[in-house]
Structures are given as structure tokens and as C-alpha cells.
Length: 307
Image 1: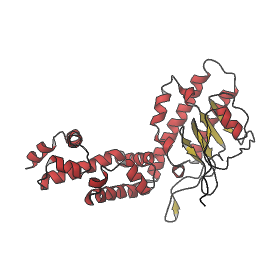
Image 2: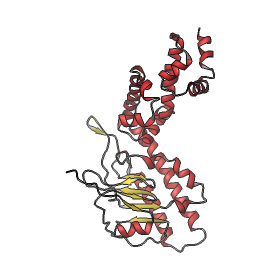
Image 3: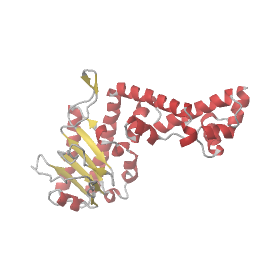
Image 4: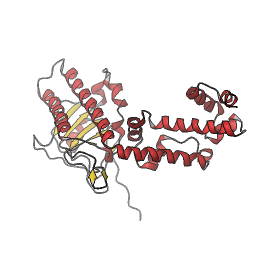
């Protein structure tokens, strides 16, 4: 008999989440810092996964998944940062270790950012969609910077709330995200060996996709397809490729499409529509539009110029 899966717990308010995890009520209804070390707090972790209706940034002193090549590790061991966006499933790992065992956690309800530019900008940070095994590994100095920012926000929340408190806290949150973005770019550099391997595998996957006529059956390859094949989240894959080549995963797919299209326009007598369908386009017009956007020529103009 198949075992029934436990329903996911959902927490839409910070107060609801604090109480469920055995924590005191937050000092602000829309933002909180959970500091389990300085305040000797014990978090009651749920037996299975849960969903938060707000952003979560957590610092863990010990993180799994350090990258190893040969006999050397390519990641720092000063702890790590984990990010989660609203409505993302958290916890429920196979080994029973939940991602809630963070020493410091920042919870931010989207309403706290309302009417600030960060409300839109925060969605541009891909690391909120990274997998847990794509944690940001921190050096000792980086750890000091991140912990200081957590404590700055905590200190502001513990002080007297006034008309400038939200501005100050928003500025600290934005600075934290800037540093996280900077440190992730550094991690891509220190993981360059892995990145080059991924880049090579992306090329191999795309070549195989078109050479085996998979595109004719399944359509244009997607970033999700590549990430599934490589066991990397779409956001992390795009950011890693951008750090290596200046182009994200979608741009790599488009470049391969144009490369294959040029090849077919040059050495075959297939019509533009036939080439479009073979490459996975549902509508030839979409193919012609992309081709002109990338080459400044229509497919027929390219063929005529080549001939």
C-alpha cells in the first residue's frame, strides 16, 4: 500500500511561522531576524516540508555540498547562505535535515517592500530560485560582512521604530543582496573548473538535441531542459554561463539555433519553413524574426548572400 504524503504546511504571516517554529512573536509583523545563537533560541522543526509566503535568507555555519575536484575543495568553509522566495517549498530533505537549522535567518514579507524599488528589483536576483545544493559558500571575511548586516537589521528592529526605520532597514537588506550577488560571482570564479565542464556539456547537449531531430519532436530546447539534464537549477545555470561567457542559458540556446539554421541555409535546399519546423519552431515567422534579430538578415537574405 502506497504511503500517503504529508500535506505541506503553509505560513502566510511571520507571526504564524514564528509560533509554529516555537519562537517568540516577531517585533515587526512584516520583517524579522531569528538569531538562535545570541538569544539561545531553539527552533522546533516541522517533520516535513513547508511553504512560506515571504522571502527567507538564512546563514548556516556548516553547509553540505562543497565542490571537490581531485583532492582539493573549491569552496570556502566559513558557512553558507541559503535563499528562498515566496511559495517555494522548504525542507523535507531525504536525510531529515531541514534547511531551518540556520544560526541567523532573515524573513521579509513582500508587503514590507511595497512602494520601494526593491519590491521589483528583488525578483531579479536569481539566487532566490537556486537549489539548496547551490548554496553560497562564504569565506571568513565574507561571513563577517554578512553577519554584521544581519545584526544591523536586528538592531534596528530592536530599537525605537520611527518614520525612518523602514528606509534604514530596506537599505541594509539591499546591501545584503548586493554582497550576496558579489560573493556568488566570486563563487563562479572559484568554481571555474566546474563551470567549464558545464559549458562543454551544454554544447554537447544542444548538438545532440539537434542532430537527433529531438527538436522536430519536442520543439525548441528550453533552459529547463538543460538544467534537468545537468541537475542544476535554471537560475544557477544561467548565472554560471553568464560569468563564463557573458551570455545566459537562453542566449546559448538561441546561438545554437542560429548556428544550425545557417548551416541548413548554406548547404541544403530546404525552405525556410522546413528549416524552422526541423529546428523546433511552431511558426516559421518566429524563426525568421529571431534569425533577423541575431544576424540583421532574413533567412532568405542570408542564403542569397552566402550563395
